[in-house]
Structures are given as structure tokens and as C-alpha cells.
Amino acid sequence: MATFPDHHAPGSPAAGAPVPGSPVLVVGAGPVGLTAARELARRGVPVRLVDAAPGPAPTSRAVAVHPRTLETFDQMGVARGVLASGRHNKAFTMYAAGRRLVRLQADYAAMPTRFPYTVVIEQTRTEELLREACAEFGVRPEWGVRLTGLTQDAHGVRARLVHADGTVEEYRTPWLVGCDGGHSAVRKQLALPLLGESSETWQLADAPVTMDLPPDTIYWAHADGHALMMVPYLREGHWRLLDTAPGPNAADETPAEAAARFSAKLSAGLGREVRVGEPSWTSVFTFQQRMVPTMNDGRVFVAGDAAHVHSPASGQGMNTGIQEAYNLAWKLAMVVHGQAGRALLDTYSQERVPVGRALLGSTGRATFLVQFKNTLAPVMLPLVFAVVRRVPALRRRIQRKVLGGMSGLLRHYAESPLTTPGEPPLPPAGSRAAAVAAALPEGPCARALYAELRDVRWSLLYVPDGGTADRTAAKAAGAGEWLSVRAIGAAPGQRAAAGAVPLPDPGGHLRAALGTAAGGWVLVRPDGYLAAGGTRLTDRRLERALSVLGPVPLHRSSGGSPAVPDTVVSTTRVMEGSR
Image (cartoon, rainbow, N blue to C red; front, side, top):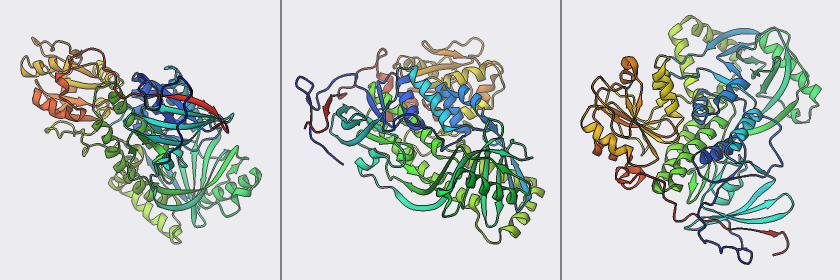
């Protein structure tokens, strides 16, 4: 880990001196850093957000927001703007040598969600919406602030920040979150290795397109031994284009030359005239398939492309990073507020490294399918997809397999230290609570459950029984501000435990979806995953489920959150060259 000299001004706190209430430093103001900053601030944690760039990115790498990320945005309270700003895509259509092979429709029957589609939206717009969401809590990016060094001790992290005017700032913070992309300065300062290898060179472009195919699907077109993709934006006639074999001179092309090359290739692949206008932006890049073996070192964490870089084939990078930032933010907030021990932060890497590893595998397979360089493709593809078209069961299986990998809906935390296996017929522990909500009929119960998932706290949902479950629920309701206790539709003659807030369940649909009756319960994490559950709520079972938070949570007194004893900050600016 890199170190640098200690600088502090006369009269300022010495390095390591505790100063309560200091901001967590988030490095990188892209979608991942913005999510981390927003969620920490929403949970009452002071945040400082810096970025080396002079301002917001003018171009978009990522353009797809998948269903699980839409669920996360809904929990964050920012989904409405994303949904209104993008095109809702529900299909993937494949062509080869001018012939239509197959159109795969979205099929989420096996993975219920409120958002059964991918939203195609420019990353620039996603970031704009997240900046607005951060500003609601007084957090605004500081542009032109570059991290050039960091070190840490038992009390905090010292970061060296260089401002655009050359000012050097030695900033001390209790925690640092690196969301600064594939060339992450935070990752390099921690000396975390990126394991993997380099892969293919592709080209992205945003351009107007004229053709006679409707913009109601993503198109994949194979011709002359390689493939291209077209993704429709909400703005009529404008598309994101991807060429998996742009050629050695693509980076030096003029916009007109790039347009002509895309036009010729797409026309050959789709079997119709395609006229591509001059791109507003192009990027030729060599992507990699790499990841770090751990996502934290002491008080420093990495998320998003700072932790893993991979092919853009399935549009997973931004989505995965947002999930990581959300996962980390609620855990870090609990530790900052003294509601959990440091061990909770270990679960961040324990949960997310396996996801990143699986992501490299799935994006590797997606890369192979997207580029499909096989010389026998002109013969093989029509034969293979003729079978797919004629066998509905096979077609559904392919649709669900492809969507399951891309959507994020099948990812779970069944093996997490935070997960306590439940009892059938309860939903699997570690799975999404949003799937339960999506399976409910529209009405007060579904609306109440979605609202509960937007809460920043843990949620204990239980069915009153007039006995043991109510006594445990009453204890839980007094455990502290970190836990919400909801009594599911009490039966006639039953009353909820003291402190529990009723959750309407007319018709018993939620009880049926949870597979539970009187005394039954489920525990939902702040990120919307089911941590535990059972047919009979007792002190022992609930304490076991919450044990990873530290000392038995049910024995804590209610009231405000205690301050963290080792929260520190020391900030000093010195002009470069004055040391």
C-alpha cells in the first residue's frame, strides 16, 4: 500500500485524532459511486464524493439497466425517472446473412419481477438522475479532484487528493470507497491484482439509423464471419451500435467512414438497406476479463469496474457495480451508526466476489455468442435456430437462460454468512423479496410490501399468533431504529405485538406466498434479500439470524444510534511544491 508524508496545518487535529461525524470518502462519481454516495447519505452517513474528471462524462458506455437494477432503483426511490427516460426492451432478434433466424421474447415467468424488461437508457442520463438523487441529501460531486495516494491505520484512512488548481489535500476519513473505474487509483494504491486476461477489440458507436425494421427489439446480425448488434434508444431513429470486428484502422476513421462501414455491414447482416448517419460518438477499445480476489482491505473498499472489468456483451458492468454499491452502503451505514460490528463488512467481499466470478463466466459465454466467429456459422446458425423455432419448450428454456443471466434476477445469497436456511415451503433464504411482492395481486398488500422494501432498515415480517411470536416481535420492535417490525394481516381476534406496524394482507395472499401461518416469519435485509424465516418466530431463532450483526441485537435498547468511537477526520491543504 502506498504511503506519503504527514502534512497538517498548525492548530488542526493531528493525524489519527478522532473527529466525530466525519464524511466517508467515495472516489468516483459515475453510476457506482453515485449509488454508494446516495445510499450512505439516505442512511444518515456524511459523504464526500470526488472525481478526477473535470465534469460529468459526455458519452455513454453502458446503455442497459436490467430488471434487478430496476428493482434496486425502486428501493432507492429513483426508478421513476429511469423508466421515463429509456426504451423498455422485451425482445432479442437474430439475423444471419440477411435471414431472420429467431426472435426471442422476454419470458420472466420463472423469475417474477415488477420490471419484466430491460430499459435502454444512456449512461449519461442515468448518472444525471443519480446526481439529482444525491443532491436531495446535500451530496454533490467535487470534480477535478484526483486521488494520488492513501494509507490507513486502526482509526481511519488518509487520502492524498490533488485538486485541479494543483492544491494538495491530505484528507482523513473513517472509510473510503473506490468506485473509480477500470483504471482505479484506489485499487492500485491497495495493490489489489486484477486476475484474468485481455480479450477482444470491439467498437461502440451512437448514430442515427434509417431502415425498415421496428425499434422494438435488440438486433444481432451476423455476416462475413463476425457479428454486430443494434440497441434502440428512446429517441426515435437513434441506436447504439456494436461491431465485434471493427478492423485495425477503425480508430482512425472519420465519422463519415465509420458510418459507411456500419451501413455496409448491417445491410449484409440484416438483408435490407441500412443507412447509418455520422456517429455522434465512437470508441474502439480492447476489453478485458479480470477481477480482484477480494473487494476490501481494512477500511477501504472497491466496487464496480474498480473490482472487475469484462466484456460489454451482456451489459452487466454498470448493473453489477450498482448492486455492489447498494450492498456495501447499508452494511457500512450500520457499522458507522454503531448498529453492527465490523464483521458485517466482511460479508461484502464474501457475497460479491462469487458474483463477480460468475459474471466473468457468463460474460465470457455472452462474448462468444455475440461475436460468433465460427466459419461454419452461415450453415450452422439457420439449422440450429430452425430447431429453436419449432420446439417451444427449447425456445422457452433458451429465453429464460439468457434472461436469467442478464437480468440479475436469479442471483442470490444462499451461501452468505447473513443467510440462515429457512423451512419449506418458505421462499428460499437468500432470494429476492421483490419476487414475492411481484407474485401478489395488485392491491394494498403488494403496495405495502414494495413500500417496505424502500425502507432503509431490516424488516421482520411475522404473522401474529397471540403467543410466542408476538412476544419476540415486541422485543424486536424495541431493539433499535435499524429494524422495522410488520405484523402481516392479523386474523380476527388477534392483535399485533406492541411496536409492530400492521401490514395489510386481505385475502391472505402474502401469507400464502410466504408459505406461512400464525407465528410464521421472514427477515428481509435492507437490500431486499430474504435472510431467514420459519414457521414459528422465537427469540432464539431470530437472534441466530441476526448474530452476524454482533452482540445479540434484541438486547439493545431502543433510541438513537450510538456514535462510532473511531470515526476520524483531518483535512489540510498545502500548495504543491511548498512541502
